[in-house]
Image (tube, rainbow over all chains, first blue to last red; front, side, top):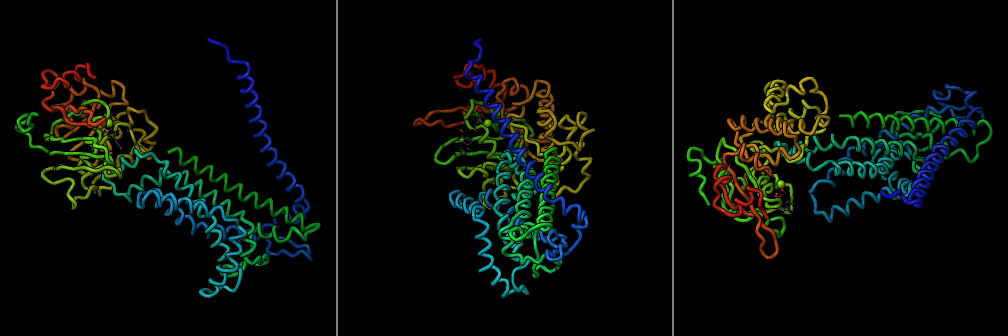
Length: 291
Length: 267
Ligand SMILES: Nc1ncnc2c1ncn2[C@@H]1O[C@H](COP(=O)(O)OP(=O)(O)OP(=O)(O)O)[C@@H](O)[C@H]1O
Ligand SMILES: [Mg+2]
C-alpha cells in the first residue's frame, strides 16, 4: 500500500487545526461576553443582591431597581405566544407533511411559511402598532400597547420556527413506521398522533425550545408593542407590561452609573433564563431519544 | 396454468385474484395475475428482483393505497368480498390481513407498547398483559425479552426486532399474515425460529410469504408461485409464470424458466 500523499496529510492536519480554532473562538467569544456583562453588573449585584429579582420598582431617579415585572412579562408573553403557536405550528407541520394537497401547492405553502421567519421584527412591530392594536381595541378592552398584542406578534414570529422544524422532524420519520402502523389497521389520525408525532418528538421539542428562546429574547417587536410598564405586574393581558429585552432596549441609551449596572444585571438574568431553557431542551430531547 | 382449486381441493380460497394489473403511473408493473390463495396454507412468492412480488403482496392489504401513483385493474376478493369495492374501508381490510415487512420496523416505543399498539387501535378489550405474553411466545421471543418489556423495541437485535414485528402482527389476530422477506435480515438461527413459527401459525392463519431463499420456500410453503419479468417495448413487466404445489415447482415444474430459477441457473 502507498503511504498517503504529503499534501493530503497537510490538508488533513490544517483542517483539523482550523476547525479547532473556530470552535475555541466561539466558546471564547461567549465566555468573554458573559464575563464583561457580569463584570459591569457587579455594582448592581452587590447593591441589590437577589432582592433585584423580587422587587417591582424600576426607578432611575431614586436608583431603585428590581426586574420582577419585566421577568414576569418576559415569561408570560412567551408562554402565551407558545400556547398559540405550538398547536397551530404543529397542525401546519402535519398538514404540510401529509398528502392532502397537490405537491406543487404544498411546496409553495412550505415556502410561504418559511418566509414568515424572514420578515424583520421591526416590520412585525409596525404592523402590530398600525393594524393589530387598533383592531384589538375595537373588539377587546385593550386601550393601547399591552401584553396581548405583544404575545400575539410573538406567536406569529415563532410559528414558522415551530412549523418548519416540526415538519422536518415529521418528514424524517421513516416511511416504514407509517406503513407498520397503517398495516396494523390504524387510521391515518391514529398513525399521525400515536406513531409519527411521538417518533418526531425530539425534533418537535427542539423546535419549540428554539421558538421559546426566540420569544424570550425578542426585543424590537416586544418593545414596540408591550407598553413598557416596568413598575407593576398586572394579571390582565390587556394591560401594558414589559420584558427584560424591552427594558434593555428602552433604557440603555440614557443610562449611566448604577442604572447601567442594573441593566447589565437584567441582561445576565435574561441570559440565565434562556440558558436554562436550552439546557432543559437538551435534557428533554435526550430523554426522548432514549426510548 | 394449473388451477389451484385442483391443487388443494379441500381448501377454500381466502383470496382470489382475477386478471389483476398494477400500474405505477404509466408503468405496468404486474400484468394479468390469476391466483387463488388457499386457506390455512403457506403460499410462497418467489422470482427475480423487481418482478412485483412485494407489489402484489401490498395489494392484498391495500397498503399500496399509500402510494399516490399506484393504480390497479381487475378483481381481487377476500372471502368473496371485493377488496377494492368503493364501500370497503382499507383500515378494516388491514385489520384482517396483517403484514410483516422485509426490514424490521418496530415503533420507537417499549416492547410492550409495540405489541399493545395494534390491539389498542383495534379496540381490544381483553387482558393486555396476557395478550402481550401470548404474542411474544408465539413469536418465540418471550424468553429473551420478558425481563425488559419496558425497554425500547428498537434497542434489541435485528433478529429480535423482526420477531417483535411478527408478534405485533399476530397480536391483532388477523386472518391472513403477509410476510415480505421476513428473514432477509436474520441469521440462520433466527430464520429457523421464524420458520417454526410459520408452521405453527399455519394452523390458524393463512400465510403468504415472499422469499428469495429457495430452501426456505421448499421448507415452509405448501403452494409456490413463481413470478417472472418479461420485457415488452423496453419495459420490464412482472407476471405470474407458474403456480403449483411446492414439490411440483421445485422438482417438476412445467415452465423452463421456473426450472432454471429454482435450480439457480437463472438469467
Ligand atoms: N412505489 C413505487 N413507485 C414506482 N414504482 C415502483 C414502486 N414500488 C415498486 N415499483 C416498481 O414495480 C416493480 C416491482 O417492484 P416490487 O418491489 O414489487 O418487486 P419485488 O418483486 O418485490 O422485488 P424484490 O425482490 O427486489 O423485493 C419494480 O419495477 C419497481 O421498480
Ligand atoms: Mg420486494
